[in-house]
Image (cartoon, rainbow, N blue to C red; front, side):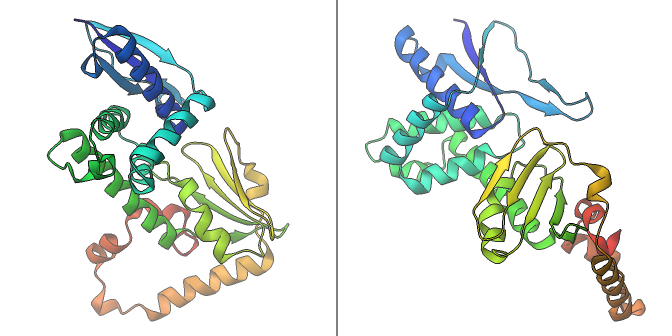
Length: 268
């Protein structure tokens, strides 16, 4: 029997839309959830930002555009039947960069809604899809924690604080609550270079996000005179406190991976 694969967009809204369509297909066709799968369109930086996903034989592929109404219906069901904790857990998994995340989330939702106590679905660790969601969630959580530690703001000439990141996972939205709470009186912008997304925060206002944003290189490179002074001062501080006889590059890379350093002023 042919498998129906719903190809959804790489976002929480896109994946939950795919879950809605796959669920309707499973019920209306009478074939069940075993004959429905989800695949997510991933962005390829090496191919000029084009979408791709793995194709398999003997499968019917259906494109699933994001639908806010469908996604909200799924969200309401998840919160009511599985609880806030499980819903947040799945949101972390959906922020992963792994291509199998949509299928893992879909089958985890199926498992949870089939249980009498859906809130205990995350205890079902013997289920391979639930276990996979655990792996995805842990990876995303670790990257969020590191971004909160290693993210660096630079003050531009116009007074706006700018930070650039290039995370493997889509963690930008999870940085907003932390930095808006820490910097409520600042205008700041956090730019995800991999996904061309930006998080904005206006002074004494809430934060918001925008997609398909191109950062103006010339404006972003104009840091204030005071910022340049403090960057030089901080680099000098880092060099001064270093003890050459105890230098351990391997341990340093363990605590501060090279992956984060190209957007940190002290390593520029």
